Image 1 (cartoon, rainbow, N blue to C red):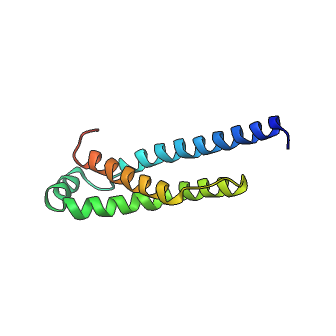
Image 2: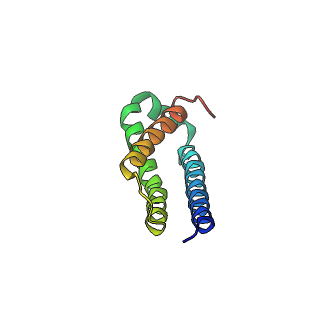
Image 3: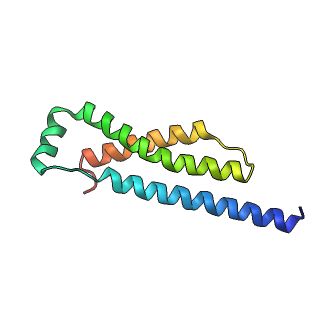
Length: 109
């Protein structure tokens, strides 16, 4: 494989990973804003069950984010690149928790 083919392959790999991460992040932001139920139930949950609610919502967001981590892992395998799944998983957990905390505290509406 010559240098130009190698560079193109790396550029495509980087582009695919960037698209996956961007779409994944936007989906997680959108999902974190979802609440099915009346506003009163949301307020009651925030006041009475904050810790269990944030844990459950974080688990839900993490499971949704695993779809994008799976896609990222597949792209890495296809391009025979090293993948840091454990670091990406920790980042996903922190992002999920942070997004839920921001939404539940009402810092962003």
